[in-house]
Length: 468
Ligand code: AMP
Ligand code: ZN
Image (tube, rainbow, N blue to C red; front, top):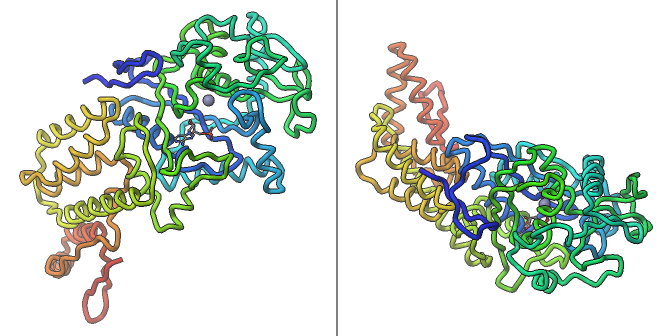
């Protein structure tokens, strides 16, 4: 079965064939840590998490690298506006380093709540300044750069096919990115590789370089870190769609400029989450966070479930009403699963062939450019399949949850359907097993109680129980 993904570079659903058989190098653009991640950002990280877990499900060994931007990102993805980190520091009367540490921790805390797995390597821009300087030197040697008013620029006219990722003409790119006329630039789309004091005289984060004291441009860090940790052949590069026209286009120019050949095989982009009232943006302060959702009584996994209901390549409109619908759907699903998990007969025999057929179906949908909606249909079919016993169902639920990551095997207290007759029967059987020294059976029964979320209390009067 082939794994097919929509590739922004080819504008096609391409069969996924990594550079090295069985192994995947994957790079995802990480957060700029000057504020909390908003739920739009997190939709993109959920998509990337599903992608990575799907690859792992299909037995690829994935090396996932993500950067943390703690320097160099200006308000616009072009070269104007304020330094975001400095803005955050001023807003909160803290140092830029304190801001970076606080929001990086907050970001990973949110990811944990959303069951987003930590990348194999997380790398900070400020810890890779020398790598970035080395990259600029190489670009300089190859004639791609020029200095102007103290800054070092990448000259896009020197790079053949600068527009290939965006599939736009230079004029369209210029119009779309609303880049301001900058007299220092030869072409308005040229971008900064190294800023010196000519840009921000009071810049706190700055380093020595052959071009003067300063700091790197934002686009540079992703090229430098992905080349360092994954190398010249990168299988998958991801981000949100907003990155296609500027950030990723510039990354291609820098990386391919240095290595002299094709760099990324598959570019994958997640569409935006928008509010029903319009665009969500960190800089305008108009944004929702995981904490906002929690304050409104939703769990982070309600939000993960909500995101999984729509295709990653389609824009998703957020409203609390639709989140509420998702929560109800998720709750019902968990209740149905709890019924299965609490009624497993450990003596049941499992039919591997039938289980295999379901896994196959599930894989085929995942392999169709992450068709998660259809993958959920497979789960629902499993739940209503009268020929599957509960043990078989639980095996499949656990298996599918490797990608969904919705804690489907955890029984919520309120969703425990207590079957008192069964509990009393098992308590009696456990007592008998203990008397006859059949400790294996007694342990087995104890595990069944754990699965049912039931706590046994052995007292002088006998064994009682309660829902944990
Ligand atoms: P940033 O921290 O702004 O660099 O963004 C982090 C990630 O979130 C990037 O991959 C962006 O493309 C993505 N992103 C930004 N806004 C949204 C949004 N509203 N919906 C989905 N993804 C977004
Ligand atoms: Zn990036």
